[in-house]
Each structure stands twice: as C-alpha cells, then as structure tokens.
Amino acid sequence: MDPGRRVMIDDRRPPSRRDATSARADAYNRISKSTKPGPSKTAQNAAKYLTEEEQSRKFVADEDKFVLKQSKKKADIRVREGRAKPIDRLAFNLRYIDEERDVFDDDEGDMDIQLDAPEVIVQGLTLAQLKELESDISSYHILETDRRNRQYWEALRAICVDLKSKVDTNTRDGRVVNSVVDDIDRILSPKSYDQLEALEKQIKTKLQTDENIDTDYWEQLLRHLLVWKSKATLTRIYNEIKEKRAEMLKTRGPVARPKQDAKAISNAAVPSEPQPSPQPVANEDASNVTNALYDREAARGVSENEEIFNAEEQVPTGSKPQWADTYTARKPRYFNRVQMGYEWNKYNQTHYDHDNPPPKVVQGYKFNIFYPDLIDKTKAPTFKIIREHGRRKGESFAAAGEADTCLIRFIAGPPYEDIAFRIVDREWDYSAKRERGFKSSFEKGILQLHFQFKKIFYRK
Image 1 (cartoon, one colour):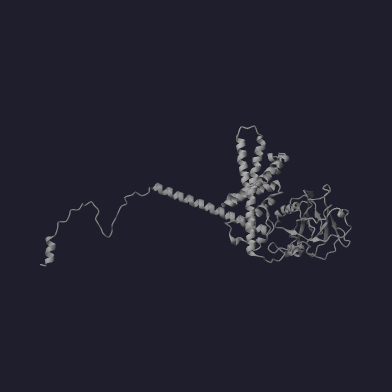
Image 2: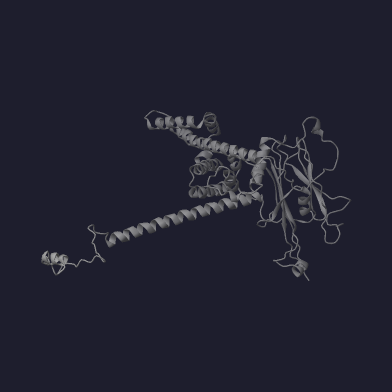
C-alpha cells in the first residue's frame, strides 16, 4: 500500500455530529443576516413624503424664477419700443446690477436708452397710477431672491406708499400741515443712512419713555424717517447702477449709430406731404420742472396704435410780441402722439382682409405741451387752425386718395414762443365716448389737446 495513503487512513477522525435544523454551509451561496434592523414601513413612507415636499418646493421656486424672468423680458421689450409703464422703466434700470440676468436677453441698443432716477420716474403720478405701481412692485418683490434687488423694490414700495398718502387727502399724511412736513424734510434730507438709523433709535427710545412729549409729532417724524431711509437706500443702489453702466459704456467704447429719421415719422403722420426734420433750437426750455414733466409723460409710453409725433413746422412769421424786449423767449418742450389705425371702408373691405390689412391712416392726435413757467398763469395757452392758400374749412385741394393738411399753432404768453405742427385736416370728434373723448385742458403747467377724427360711414 502506498505509504501516503496509509498515513491518511491512520490519521482519520470521526466526523463531528451536525444539528439537523441548522443551515447547511455552502461556500458558493453564503447567506448572512444583518444584525441592525432596517427602517419600518412607516419610516419609509415618511421619507418618501419629505422627498415629494422638497420636489414640490423646488418646482414652485423654479416656476417663480421663470415668471420673474419673463416679467423682466416683457419690461425690456416695452422700454425698447417706447411704450413702457413706470414699473417697466424701474425694472429696466435694475438690469445693470442684476447678477441673475441672462446676457442673451440684452440688446445692442440698450446702452443708448436714457437712464432715469427711480424717484423721477415715480414723481407726479396720479393716485390710480400709484396704486397700480405699488401692486406691480409687490409682485417683483415677492418673486425676487437677490438681496440687493429686494432692497431696491422695498425702498420703492415705501416711497410709493408715501406719495400715495400725500396725494390721497383722506389719509392722515394728506391732511398734515405743510409747514410741519417741510420742517421734517428739512431735518432729514441732509442726513446719511447711518445718521438716520441712529436718529431712528433715539426716536423709538423717546416714544417708549414716560416723558411729556408731542407724540403725534414724533410719530410723524418716525414715519418720514423710514421714507428717507428708503430714499437713501435707493440712492445708493442707483449710484451702483450708474457706475456699472459707466463701466459698460467705457468697455464698449464709442459706437456710431444712425439717428432716427424724423422725416419718416412725419411721413407716417402725414402721408401726402413729407416734412423736413425739425432743427434743434438753442433756446429750448430745459428747466428742471420742464424736464420732470417731460419724463413723467414719456414714462407713460405709447400704446400699440400710437406713434411719437414730432412733425414740427416753422411758425408763420408775424409781428414781434410786445414782451420780447422784457423776457428771453423760450421754445416749449412737448411729447406728442399720433394715433394710427385701419379704415375698413367699402374699398378696403373689398381689397384687404385682417391677414393683409390696408395701410394705416391717421385717426387722431394727443398733444402735450409744457408751460410750467408762464408769467401770467391766469391766461391758459390756446391754439388755432391755419389753412394755407385761402382754403376754407370743408374745402379740399388734395388729389384723390390723399388727405388735406393744415397747421395747428399753439399760442402762449411770455416767456414762451409759439409752436406749430402739421396735421391731417379732418373733422374732429367732440363726443365724450370712451377712449375717443375730446380733451382740452391746462393744468399744472401742461396743455393737453387730445382729439380723434369723426368716422365717416357711407350708405347706399
């Protein structure tokens, strides 16, 4: 026998007894049980619920971000097209320091659009406009996540609320004595933001004490102080906007851009008789009050059926005004609009449709001329129609398919010169219909003349 096999037989041991109920060892399929118990079904459901809540929160945040981005895009478009509301101009200014802004939303001509101070934009608005602006500001403030942008909208909302309280005479601020308000503004206006904060703490401490003080005065001072803090915040942010814009302009360098063709505007308003481009006048009124009135009117923009109207004409020469030797003559500023639209007469209904409309024609005008510094404010400026070549009202010398034109001359007292525009000569609609009402007024230094032409209906 082989010696090795003999050694193996002699060394053999009896097999150990195995428990029949125990698991059989298998080197190729080892099963192990965890010593730590896993989460219960309730815990798993709770974890799943929290995950869904987080997903829902993320979805809402993404949706708010999308809505905010679209609102800013729409504001940019309205500003570029010249039909911006105050909220659009405020949002457009913020674009220069908005870190979350997409550079692909910028346009090549955005840098050439005038940058106005936020306080100038909100000044002079009516109560209804201030209420609408406050609602729009709140919408932006809710959607914004950037800290500086939220401060911007918070400050604007505080200023808007303050202006609204001053315009509305039913509120407490609207009934407050003007001398008290002037004294408060005189105290607060020269102070910096840090000084206003220190003064705020002093006032709050004084109001909490038992001293015998004029509580109404100190509460009024505290309310105005919060407004001036908002103004200081807005000034700081606006300075950052101007600095950033100046850096961008410096980086871009000088760019030659074609000027707007004033002749094209004139042709659109008066198709039959193109007018030359008005030349700039050296003595044009450029006072701060006039500029503020102009900015307020420009902030209202133009609607879809309107265009800016600058078809200025040379005023017919006449005798020199008597006040010319006493006062330096100024040319008034203006912001006029021409209303354009389609006329669906029988011919146009036959040859055109809504997909291929006929050419637009002039349907009316909105003149807004600024006379804030009239010497005699008891005499309102007037206007008169001038028809050349002896033509009378109702007569027509124009060729077929064209419209007669005439001059409308605006006349004011010293120190303003007369100014004239060429318009289409048609019969005005003096009715009080909605959106077509005739308006001729002179209030707060603004002469407003709004009118539309009568619609002519042909019957068989």
